[in-house]
Structures are given as C-alpha cells and as structure tokens.
Amino acid sequence: MRLSQLAATLFLSSVTFLPVHVHAADEADPVVATVAGVEILASELTLAEGDLDPQFARLPDEQRRVAALAAVIDIKTLARKAETEKLDQTEEFKKLMAFQRDRALHNAIFKSTVVDPVTDADIKARYEKEIAAVSPEEEISARHILLKTEDEAKAVIAELDGGKDFAELAKEKSTGPSAAQGGDLGFFTKGRMVPEFEAVAFTLKAGEYAKEPVQTQFGWHVIKVEERRETAPPAFEEVADQVRQVVMRERYGDLIKAARSETEINVLDPDLKTAYDAISQQQQ
Image 1 (cartoon, rainbow, N blue to C red):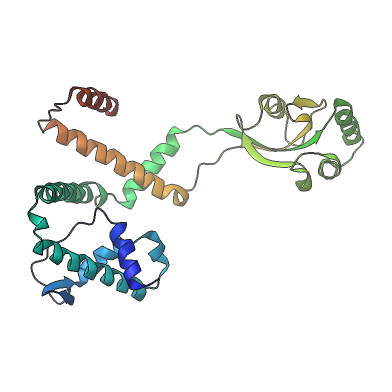
Image 2 (image 1 turned 135 degrees about the horizontal axis):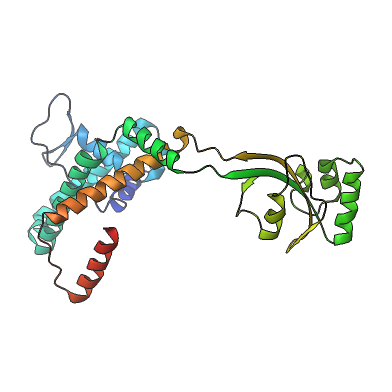
C-alpha cells in the first residue's frame, strides 16, 4: 500500500485524533520533519502510530513509522491550508475544539486516576475474591451411543452387558457426530445438555452406563459416565486481562459518581432528562 494510502487510512480512521501542542523539542523528542516551518516531533509519530488502523500492526516497525510520518505530514499540510482559508475561526471549528479539549482532559484523568494506579496486585486480589465467592460446580465426562430406535438402543445395552467396549460400539453403531471419537462428549456441567439426557447422566457413577435407553429429540441414547469432578476455576493468567477491565470499569464508575455529585448538572430537554435520570438511577 502506498504511503499516501496509508496516510489517508490513518486520517479517515482517526476522527478523534487530538493534536498535542509541544512547546519545544529536546534531545529526547527530536524534530523529524517540518511542514511550512511547523515542526513534527518524534513524539507526534508515536501518537500517530497509536491511531493507525489495526491492519498496520502487522507492518515492520520502520514501515509503520514511515506510514505515521506520511499521515502527520498530510494532516499538517491540510491544516495549514485550512488556516489560510480561516476554517479555524468558524464557530463549528471552535465548538469542535472545545469538545476535543474536554474529551482529552477526560482521557487524561481517566488514565491518571483509573488506568495507571491499577497494579498486578490489585488484579490478583480481585481474581482471588471472585474465585472465593464462586462455589465449585460438578461436571461429568460422558460418552453416548445415539440410535434411531429404542430396540436398537436396548440391543446395544445387551452387548455392553455382555462385555463389549463402549467406545468401540459407539464408533460402530452411533449415528451421532461424536461416533468417530467413541461417543466422547467431554466434560460438561448441568444445563449444557438437553434435560432428558442430563437427568440420567448426572445420576450415574464414574464408569457406569445407563441400563435403559434415554429418548430425546435427537433419538435414543445409551449413556456412560467416565468421570465426575468439580469444575476448576480458570487460571489467573487466562483471565487477568478480563479482571483488569472489570477493576478499571468499577473505578471509572466510582470516579464518575463522585464527579457528578460535585458538579451541578441540569438536563433541560424534558425527554432527555427523563431518560438520563433513568440511566443514572440504574448505574447507582
């Protein structure tokens, strides 16, 4: 993809691109280019990279940086042209800049108050709290042989009574999609299977098969339970990112609630006021 196309993609996908005004460059943030005498700093390329479309994440670092530079150059070039046409002096632009400023401040306090203070210890503590509050649930590992008629199912049970291997019979005679796996359904908890099936399956001991076939909407089942156990909680590493999001969402909610209580808020439109008050009540 050409650099101009990269820049266009960045611009079109970054409606909320917020300019950062840096007063002076230094050695840690050098000037990498200029547009009509306006400096482009290395830090601006970093900001622009963050706004690139996700497809650019696959590019090598240098290509991604060049794409960001092309985007910033085009943005500043058109910005200078817009200034010559006095578009920055329109009421519409001023309203947009006021909103963008407020949004940038919102994001800044969110980062400093909610995101940055969250530590790994906070996440671990919340994970352990959630795990402690959840009671283990029983799950079973089962196999089944699915047949079209009750007589066929009873014949299979007779073969099992005679010592035939369940998995081999499933491969040979089951009409279900798990036949190739010897009828293996893996582990499941209550509520995962149709009621008639699990009503019988959860009464069986490990290694036991049902002595009577079970009818469901799919046909006639011969069921065997291989193992019973309690569900294990997900490992911390598997859910750490999700827990982090929960912690940040709750802290953001606390931040918003406190800020609203300290701020005079008047919704003048009657319909909007009714809807806003209802939402606020739900959040509380």
